[in-house]
Amino acid sequence: MTSEYELMRQRTISAIRSVYQRHGAGCCLHAVTDDGNTEDSSALYVLGLALDKGHDDCMLAAQGLADMRRTARKKAIAQALARDASGSVAGTASSAGST
Ligand SMILES: [Zn+2]
Image (tube, rainbow, N blue to C red; front, side, top):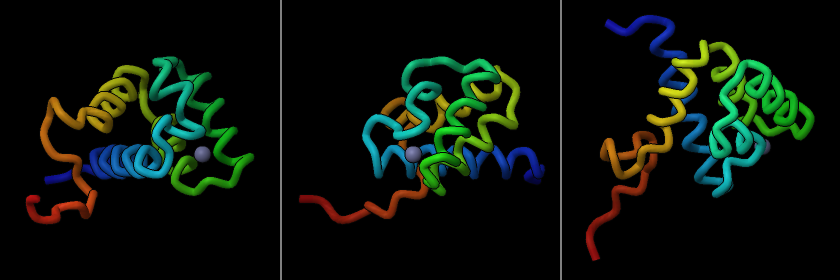
């Protein structure tokens, strides 16, 4: 069973990953996801940036982060960026063969 909240969380995590695939430093999300400013005010700040710049992926990720409590936010960020620690990055279509 997947709750609505969990779906939102997963969408947010995939959105963060896609932002990082496009922009190595996390684009609008940088202050929260890279600098570790995980307060509510920071989440709202990066959401504002994303809206200003009109970045759909940043907006989606920032909106999701803004909707979470701080502890959940930190966990989601850690999950989104844990490329090595927790295995595969879901949602990337780069399952090409070996070299
Ligand atoms: Zn952006």
